[in-house]
Image (cartoon, rainbow, N blue to C red):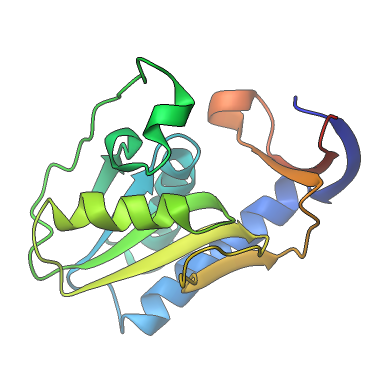
Length: 182
């Protein structure tokens, strides 16, 4: 973990409740599940999207199509990440044309990841609409991007790090606020 833990923002129950609320809001805003597809942004957006998919199936009896988006090559900071960035597979086994695409990510910060995800999605086809669902919106936007669905708004300092941990990757479900190491 990157820095000292200042506080626990959400525990496992808080994460579950936030994702349950987001699932209900997606159904409500889209007036059901017709033409709605979910796309998780690698890494932690994927298990969050899977959980939202499961919640919607539980509520509506419909399993929404789910895709996985790797935005590595769409990042505007690609040259600063690594000489040889690791590119993972994008798996969107359905057409996005005419669909209401809900992109799912863990944290909305500067907006640059969301912008890259928008570009990657548009390269897949022409959706009817693209919406953004995030577990945490921490502010500090550098681009005019906002989430349609937010688990929790968390005003932060630029000296802080928000760490979302998910069971599938990290072995725990929680959201921690960390002090950025000097």
